[in-house]
Length: 49
Image 1 (cartoon, rainbow, N blue to C red):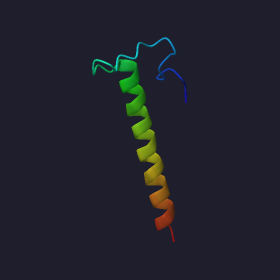
Image 2 (cartoon, rainbow, N blue to C red; image 1 turned 30 degrees about the horizontal axis):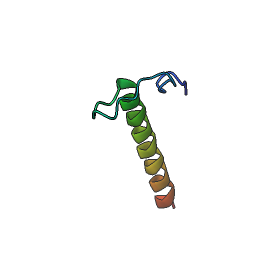
Image 3 (cartoon, rainbow, N blue to C red; image 1 turned 135 degrees about the vertical axis):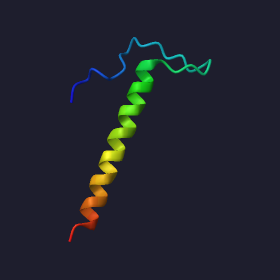
Image 4 (cartoon, one colour; image 1 turned 90 degrees about the horizontal axis):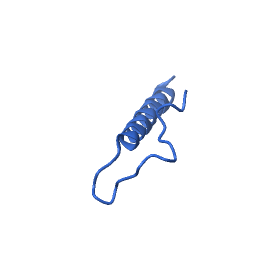
């Protein structure tokens, strides 16, 4: 997994005016997808005989 999609420290975080920067949006989307995949894996392990 590369850190290409991760937001850099210099990325402008414009949350004050309700405007998320694309880097943060991509980061949260990646985080959400990773958590979903992990949840599916855990569920599959729990349902395994």
